[in-house]
Length: 333
Image (tube, rainbow, N blue to C red):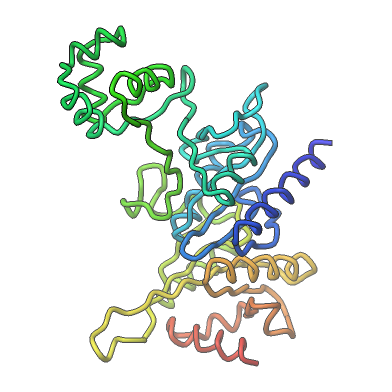
């Protein structure tokens, strides 16, 4: 029953995103994110499940790692938190990832209606435009003490609101707007397409975890020796994002283009074919290339847009330029 509910929820989320004009990937069938989606410059990695408490800290970290590598915004979409339904037009958080229900998702992406409320320990809160609040208070010739007395809170709290350093409850915010006759509640901006810090404290520089198998570790070390920068992932359909510097622009002194390759590693078999198709779908959405390094004999050179490369072929490649040339030749073929 729970699996059926989750399947229906994933279908519903995909329908909403498509209606909003997103290109949506096929379902990933992995513990990490379930769907990738892109509309113009917005890329999403969505984890979808009935109860958002089902997202563990480890899985959340893996989703954020993949989002960082792909300059995407991670989101969780669900219906419940513990025993309660998620409220409409409220943003929740699960280990730093914004979480919302399908109603809020629809309003935001299809209708263009921003949520204004977020959930945190103790209840529901809003953010205030502190600069607008100060201007409105001074225009009405009210002191900090006057406003504090009207609200029944401390003068220090009012000062904190104006400094933008403190959120408040919905009741206090609405009363403030009434006192100052000004709209003060700010919309929630929950999309984070790029981290300011290249490696935030909760995302280790060397990857989320060590490679899941000796085969993965072996292949990724070869790619590093070839000259790729490797960003390992966990629980995703691909094992890593391999980043190279393109030759384009180097001779004319321009900044070289960074080529991102979704890199899967697999033994030959039916699961390999399915995985290659999922990675291909993800690469189309995220505007990256995709390759699957295969341990074993494989006659095909490509599945959808994913290039297949044997492990023994990889060992003969000298640098990233040769690697990308091989990929381009097989893609053309």
